[in-house]
Image 1 (spheres, rainbow over the protein chains, first blue to last red):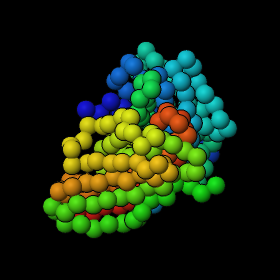
Image 2 (image 1 turned 90 degrees about the vertical axis):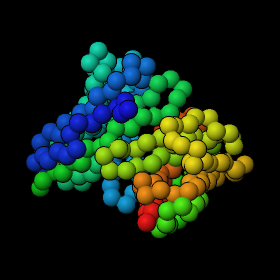
Image 3 (image 1 turned 180 degrees about the vertical axis):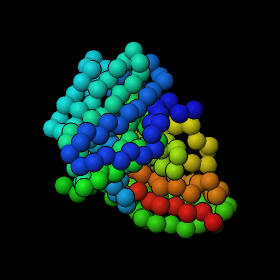
Image 4 (image 1 turned 90 degrees about the horizontal axis):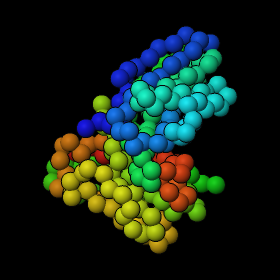
Amino acid sequence: DQQVKQNSPSLSVQEGRISILNCDYTNSMFDYFLWYKKYPAEGPTFLISISSIKDKNEDGRFTVFLNKSAKHLSLHIVPSQPGDSAVYFCAASPTGNQFYFGTGTSLTVIP
Amino acid sequence: KAGVTQTPRYLIKTRGQQVTLSCSPISGHRSVSWYQQTPGQGLQFLFEYFSETQRNKGNFPGRFSGRQFSNSRSEMNVSTLELGDSALYLCASSLRLARDEQFFGPGTRLTVL
């Protein structure tokens, strides 16, 4: 049973525009969320996190939004750059426990 | 600081065999987690070790096992391999808690024929 879902397997965006990646979760006990980025032949690298006490966290071009009532989080990348082309995974964790990952969204930024 | 290393990077086995994968965490990191990545399933949590003890376990059959040594290095073992075990196996280390920022290794690509 997939507790964290990324319903869009792929996304294409023009360079300079906004990329919005979405993630839904089912477990209301999740209170910590992260986004990872993965290039081919490399392990995922941490991008940005948010705890359930916040609804927004920003780091440079990357912003994560959390809507607890909808059990939904999103990652905004503005402006998108070709180097952002990668697979993005969202992950969620209940207190003191392991992470549950989504299936990933492959982002392609077109120059 | 050296990153997380995993050996071997690629492995081909046949059904019924067993396999051992190795992970060396970042120096000073004491938590090691293992994940299986397959197309369409994302990263599935296998188990997490801290101070040589399994602290969390995912929903995988008993054929999947692991251990951690006193230097925090970890191994995972899969016995009686099945075709469906073909996947990328990722190891991640963190300082103390699995919820601390995790640093992933490049993974071991296991192919079962």
